[in-house]
Amino acid sequence: MKNSRLSETVCFFFFFLVLSGACTIPFFFESPSMFYKLGLDKTLLRGGKIFGILSFVLVIFQPVFVSRFSYLMRVFGQKRLMSFHRGSAIVLTAAAILHPVFILWSEDFTFFPLELRYWPAFLGAGILLMVVATTFVSYFRQRLRLSWSIWRTLHRIGTPVLTAGMIIHVLEISKSFESGPPFIFLLICSVCSLFLFLRRWLLYAVQPKK
Amino acid sequence: MIKRFVFMIIFMAVSCGTASGQQLSVDDAHAEIRFDVQHIFAMTSGRFSEFDGDIIFDPGNLGMSRFDFSVKVKSINTFNNKRDKHLLSKDFFDADAYPMMRFVSEKIIYLENSRYAVEGKMTIKDVSRPLRVEFDFFGPQPHPFDKKKNVYGFTGVFSINRLDYQVGDGKFAKMGVVGETVNISVSFEALGSN
Image (cartoon, rainbow over all chains, first blue to last red; front, side, top):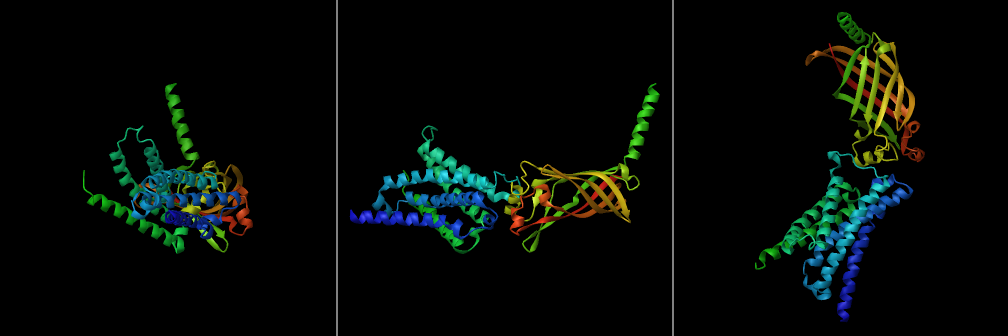
C-alpha cells in the first residue's frame, strides 16, 4: 500500500515535472516574435504559446495512459488510467482552443492571409479541428450512434496523424524549437510517440483476432 | 438628324481619345514596389506584390495624364512570415481595417531629359497626405514580343515617414528598433496599344 502510494507520487511528480518544464520554454527560450510584443500583448502571446505547449505535451502523454504498461496498470489500475486519458483529453482540447485565441488576441485578431507560405499556421488550424472533433466524438459517440469498433479504428488512425501534424506544426512555426534544449525536448517527444504508436500497432498485430 | 448625332458621337470619341492620352495597363510580371526601412543598424527590405494601376500618360499632354495606384496591404512580403503577420497587425498597417493604400496624382510636371515629377495624394490607413515623386519615363517603344503593343517604362524612388500615416505609433522608433523613414522604389512596365 505504502509502495503503491509512493509509486503514484513519483509518477505524478514526473508527469507534472515534464508538463511544467515544457511550459517554461516561452520564458527561457523566447522566440523573436516575442521581442516585438510589449505589455499585455506580450503576456497574451506568451500565454498562447504556453497553452500550445501544454496541449502538445498532453497529446504526447495520451497514448501512455492507454498503452497498458504493466507498471502503470499495477500502480493506477486500468479504470483510473482510462479516466486520466479522458480527463486529459478535455484539458488538452481546452488548451488547444485557447492557443490560437491568445496568439491572435496578441495581434488584435489579425488573421493570416490565405497564402501557401503560411501553411504551418493552417496545419495548426487543421490539427485544432481534429483535436476538437476527436474529443467531441469520444464524449458523444453513443449519441452519434457510432459503434465502438469504428470509433476505435478512427481513433487509432487519427491520433498518429494528429501527433505527427502537431510535431511538424511546432517545428515549423516556432523559432524556439529550432535548436537547443527545446529542440531536444521535441526530438525526445517525437521518438517517444513513435515508440508508443509502434508498440501499440505491434501488440495489435500479434494479438489473436476474435 | 441621325447622321448629325452619329457624327457628334464619333467626333467626341475621337477627340476624347486624343485629348486624354493613352490608357496604359501595368504589366504585372514586370512591376514591383519595393521598400526598405532601418532595423537597429541594418536595412530590412520587402515588397508589395499585388497592386493595380490606372495610368493615362502622354508626355505631350501632361495635363490629361494621371496615375491612380492601389496597393493591397496584405501582399506585403519581407521574406519572414512572422514579421509580415506583425506588419499586418494593428501595430503597423492594421490590414483588416485598412486593406488598401492608394496614390492618386493631381499634377505631372516635366523636369528634364526623361525625368518627370508627379504630385498627388498618398492615402494609407485613411490618412491622406500630399506626396511628390520624381520618376524616369522610358519609351514608348514597340514591344519586342507583341508588335500590336507599345511598352512604357516608369521608375521612381521616394521616401515617406511611416508615422505620418500612422503606420505604427512610434514605440518601435523610440526604442531604436524600426526606423521612421521608409524608402520606396517603384519600377514597372506598362503596355498600351500602338
